[in-house]
Length: 116
Image (cartoon, rainbow, N blue to C red; front, top):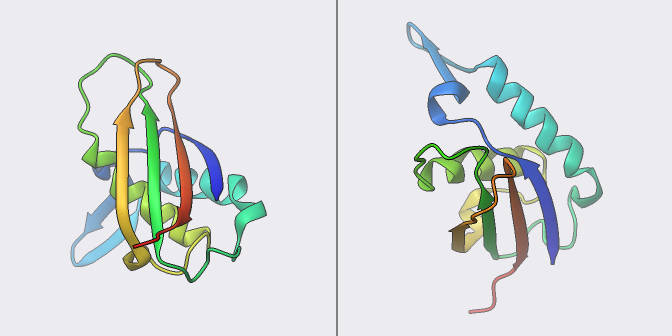
């Protein structure tokens, strides 16, 4: 099992940008990717790298604004893949996410092999 604490992910609107037919990652998205990669250095290509996985996410919002939990998932999963914690997010068979009451502006992700 791997446990990683990361900053609160940027929203999709602040992650992806478009100019004409070109899609790119915006500066705030690149910063989140970089922060994720730094936190994940000990877990690069770990024993879970090519296994079927389960994610357990505790989401501690940064403030009291209303937020959709599903907006956390895509950016978080893509950034963990980019950091080479796992090969591809198609490996994830189950996801559990819970909004936590404390306003810490972070997410705690536990990753373990999925046993079906």
